[in-house]
Length: 267
Length: 202
Image 1: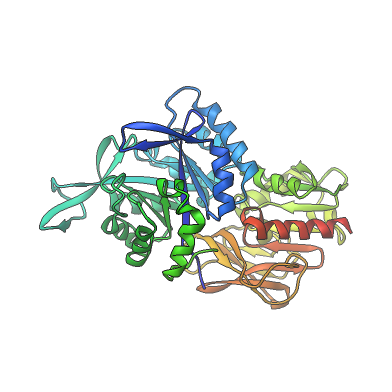
Image 2: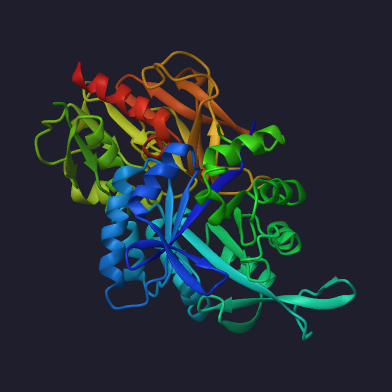
């Protein structure tokens, strides 16, 4: 046996509470992040990801308190991302107990930050989050794909998926790795929120071009979606949010299902 | 209450380790030099940072040598990088290690994804202090790019398979090392932390 596939619940945190967006519109309170972290950890989650979506000046203080509390109740690794703009922001997260820091927009705007963080804290701490979306306006120097006879490329988006960058996602993944990223958290904007399954083409394309671990994110609506992404790509981990909120699945239920389907998981 | 110290190289997060030791009932001091008297029942070398900066932080901040601080009676648990420092040298840097175990640290083969990151299982080679009560095949959390290559396999009590044989637990005299992170390895990690603290009590 070599490595297991990692199952990672994701918690979106706003002003210190876990929130759940419904079709990107209304946002619903889904509980206390520390309680949920302890619950998921006890149920057998392999890792946790917290995305802080608080957009305020109090963010740093909120994160610090959250990270310390979470670190004291779980004994599995966890990543904190969202709004990390500087080395100090990353330090604030790592020195308070998180194992990894996720960077997205700031890595695009200032790529050397990846190398600086890697040198200070080690490669394993640095998760570069890439949000990608199909762009059907073909241009030069991009990796072109086609589906249903339509050609497109994968464009990197920043600011929570709001702003296109014109950057090719596959080239960016390779560059991020070269600069010192330890892992890629890959979210498909096309798949996100659909609950129709992970974006297999995007995931496979990134995994096949990177030699660091990749986490697939966006589109998971049922345990079968995880089976599919693990069978059809060599991705290392699957991240999901909503499916774990339902008692019928839960982390343990999802992992038992994966094991039945011959996916190597830690149980 | 058993009193232990964590050596802080100043590179990263030692909160989880401190927390897991405290949860297991230890009192924990964080130290940044070996110059004060060793009043501890055990010492931990945590697993964060890079080889050269960590060795430098020890050599530059302490007049007292590591070996003179721990002698042959203070149990030491080295985690990941902390374990790698037990050896003579590492391909990660040019600084010398503590050289309390013969052998060196080499980079993982590029045929596999590096870092080796995630849950892998233990193949127990022989009984050992850290592994007491730990089942064959237990899952533990690894995150590393280098592995130990001891001169003698006698020091290896457990291995993991990652394309190559990765020594997962090593033991020699009062030196105990894990390539994985027990403080991040769920319930089985707790057992190992407790096993180490039990040695410290003796």
